[in-house]
Image (tube, rainbow, N blue to C red):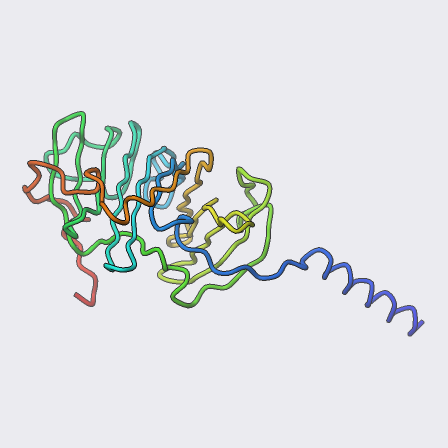
Length: 237
């Protein structure tokens, strides 16, 4: 019986090794490249329970040499993004809204269909490309579903967990490119999720030398935004 139990135990170990025998990959950079564009599906009942899903186009550049990071979110009609909420004088939720972490280190918010733009804050910055790499990230394995049990748009992905104000899960393709598959967190226990459409992902290496106009401060946009988000200050400031 003892011999049998040892054999069973060894078999179980062998099976576990066979299922999970993936060499731990290097920690990916945010988005898979220092400069890129991609289309994203947002699922955000945490900040917008009344209308939790919309799409946006995302442009990003992070230059390690200059320690500068810029990004642009082009939220489409139907958006209920938290940054676009409650701005005095704006068209309101549902209208297309563009948010730019611009090359002058300010955050700008524009409603292009309404010719409305305002200057928000310098406190809220873009995601750093080394966000996962600067420590605290734990590899959670090669998986076919995210932590909530939902499948990806690809067959499988490598996952990492990093705690901040909440749990932060980042999933990337299990190859050398490590393109973004999904980012998700549970803010106050409620989901906020980005799903990346990889067929739209385009690397933009030239942006590291010449930041494009779409990441520059919008023209005629010096009026300060009046909203809770734009007046927010972290405890350390």
